[in-house]
Length: 585
Image (tube, rainbow, N blue to C red; front, side, top):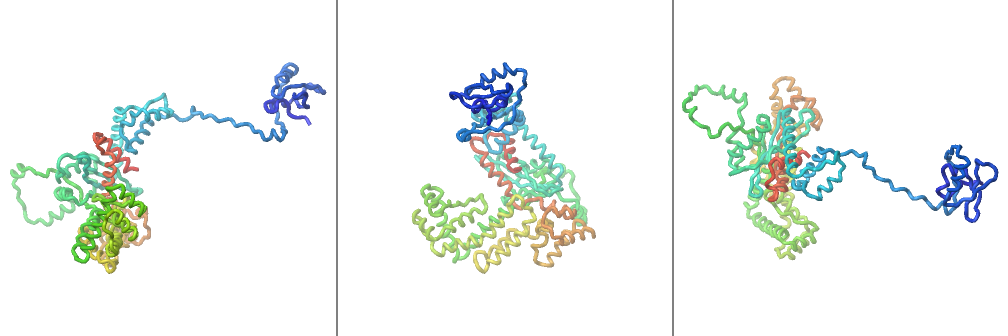
């Protein structure tokens, strides 16, 4: 049969191969026959060249248009094992979208802010070489530090304007505040929280991480807080500010209480029957030391209060009895010796890891639950391995009574620490406080007969949270939250009292009927409140605050990574931009 001619590879296709057919071999050359000439005339050509065949076609058949045809090629077994190498594809970036200068600045700013890098990063030669590899329009280049700092400051102004615009449409907001010291400098941190009135999605942002100079007195705190609230236009929208139990914060809110509502003023006017006379001259000449500062209602941090119960109150109870005082102090002393050795000696730390395969935790006064977590980590080590470790470190071993005490302590404190973790969650509304306290007291009472150290916990909770347990705001927050409603209330008379309380804001039949429908509905999600507008309004007002000041504590935890000695001259706007992006993420 006739075969595709020409060379074994290159001439086997194309117009030449379609009109010239192989006829055999002569002296190692290929013998082909031309179909256009007809007859039996043949041509001899080398296997790796078709030049003389092309000369024949161009000379004899120059007027004939040659068209390539699909033909079948038969190959020998040896040829079939030979495959043509695939060509390496070339990457073409000419059609890729190019980055503008604004986009480049945004990308680099996001990288520096989110990774908490120094602004000098933009001047790094190695960093700029990486950036130069990014295809850009008109070969734009990243600005240097001075220009980039100005860019960040402008971004902060835009961010602040956008936050103000978002807060303009919000009716109720809450804040958390605290003061923190790093590298001999003091800072006041303030975070803000609110609900989207349509979707009921919770939002948060950082309002301030502001340098505070001088002593942290109550009047300084009050002035700074009012200025921060006023600068964002939320002075009359803050339903509560949550702080820890520090005396200076407590005094600030007691000295500068919120203005009385119109209803309170009317009640006072009705109660006053006698006419009061005021000396006008004295009133005009007297100067008020308090000025015109007004602060919103003050909520004490529930997590901080629980931490005081788990540390101060529990220690006070355990040391009040001779039977528990000795074992408590000896056990904690041995644990403290372990913590000290493991944290100060690398050799001791390595021995701890060999025994427990984990590091020991060291209690910290600024971290809630840290003491419980540290004792729990020691109690997880089997007693024989723990005493073996003590022998290696030169520490007195634990006896059976002390080891059992650690386990009982962890069992007794676990419900309280679990409640603390719930209340310091990001999405936890204020309405979760009372149900959590009720369940915590029930669990503590159930362990009272089993563990003697839990006997004082219900009383300690009642004492520390005495102001909150019957507080109207806390009760309305819990009832108006679909997750809780009245499920956490066991007493029937109290349930009826709370139903009436929820109907009070709208004293009419329709509102009372809406409350009954809401309480009888089975939904747990927030979106069910869209069917009950009056209850939804109560929810937004009383659940906007957080039960804990944990958000501002997290703000300062991040601040510890930024406010370092080498970066403590950076402007406040740069800090706030970082903190804002942290809370926004």
